[in-house]
Length: 193
Image 1 (spheres, rainbow, N blue to C red):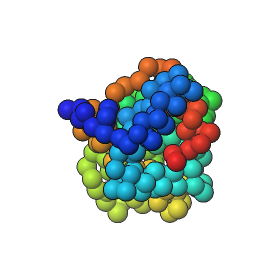
Image 2 (spheres, one colour):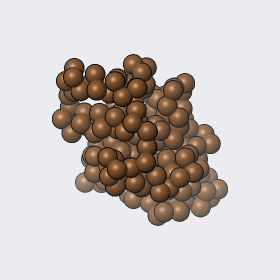
Image 3 (tube, rainbow, N blue to C red):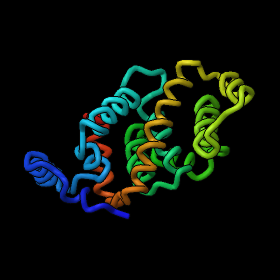
């Protein structure tokens, strides 16, 4: 159920910012951004900081890899908004739309290296079941994924399991393809701040 607060629950300064963003970009502010501006002291500021560090901070995973992880976790969750947003961003980051589409269509036959495939498999299982066995973690490590990469991937999993569930709970509006493209440009240029 979409809460009216996502449409109207902001200070005058925030409403002015949203109007400016719409004027400059030609697109409405996505609901994910609207949510972080609502009660920033409770959720928004911390969520932006954690997500930005997770997605743009130092990592052996590329920005494209992490955006693909976000899209994959969102697909497993069935979150239309998050799938579209992070698919567009991953495609733009990789400059390879067909590869991103192939991963989301069928991970096992997609043209990606085994460390990334094993990591996505791990994130999918963790998203569905909420747990991993020691043997499953050993399989990921034996695929050539470092412990640091596992930690970074788990941070992506936390960020986008949270965002996808909030998106569904608050009934985030799915943007037009042009809106998601504009968002992808922004995310690649500025990150999640």
